[in-house]
Image (cartoon, rainbow, N blue to C red; front, top):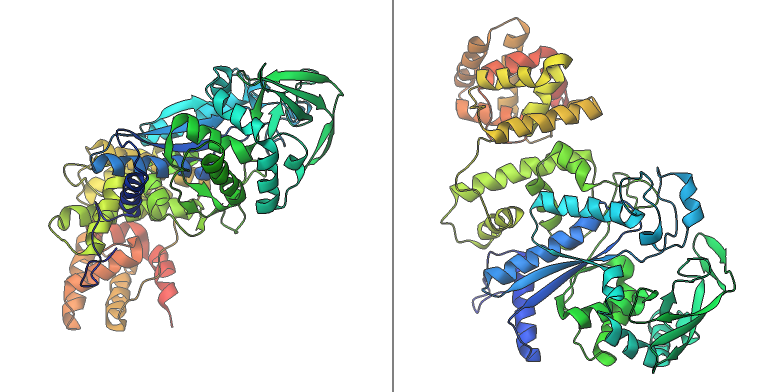
Length: 533
């Protein structure tokens, strides 16, 4: 948004979350709706291991809730779990015996590891654990419980009474003809326990019953035979569930949801649900933000079933929760790739944002305000009161890589003290733990980041490395940086800055002489070799 002079106008804290919250409020006012509580929602399918993409939906909705609260409105996030979804495919790395439970609702499938009451509860607990670790404030809702308690009964009734009209709209919008012939409702067959093999063919409005027959189903994974059972499902119970192309709308209307984002893979379903919400249920559909998919390092879609899952728990083993929140909130559009180096990059970026946050407190230009706002949202609008001791992550990984295996943490702490760092804070100790895990699991140091280095500064850097090669001690190396720089008419501060940029991808770092001494000439040669012409 820009003002009359064409200058970007700062809304809230300058982030996309603030802009979305502003648009939601304006839309709600235009609709004339009550603004006492603005509810956001995030949906989660419990049919596979929760990955970064699963968490992204909740984190983004939570950030919008925070932005609404920041504007002075009451807002809450509901995380709605579809734990009645059928198990369509056994996720990679899970036991093969789960195939006998295919198409059973995941809340009826046993936990493959035996610790939880069901497959769904295990997957749900993993997501909730990740959200709790990140510090999110949300209300969890089980889809099964919502159906069992009759929360969606009124909406189900309206959908089933208008099923033919809805079926035609689905056909027009998506080309799918299935729901022009059967009701958009999936009973759980009382004969075989499966959910998608039974077709709903009639609705008894007076008794609130759906009549069905288990005839079989064609899914992407193949054909599943039906058992032939004919029965009835009660709409005020968990005997069955609405099809996705109507269930979102039912949830929005029943819970009065005002915002929900979605991935482009379900864009058609959202389009239909928007229509159903408006035209059948009489509820203006929520304000949406559409986002792209998460891809792995080689460009494949992150998938619960194919096994290329990068979980929040994996991230938390190597980096802090705010660094993951930052990654998920940096932007709302565009495809995102995720790999192990992404984690380290985000730790670096969070450090730089923290430095900016405390250094530019009174800046009012749009870019700085936005970056400060992003840092605040990464900390859930509860930023630190003072800047922490920022030990560069790349430095820690390098130190762990050169440490004796049996005393890595002790070695790293000793070196940090030698470099002039205060190692008493819990933040520093936690970072050391992250770095130890990284090296332990991946067995390698991080590759240096290539930056632009003036030729005359690079010449000084190579001369300093020669001093390391001939056996100079830490203090002598420190002095060489000053002496060699001045001999070439270069401000020593420039040489220090470029050393840190090349080695740690930042403008400052540990006391340089001891650090270069510990790295050694061989490692320094490997790094500077990237700058050979």
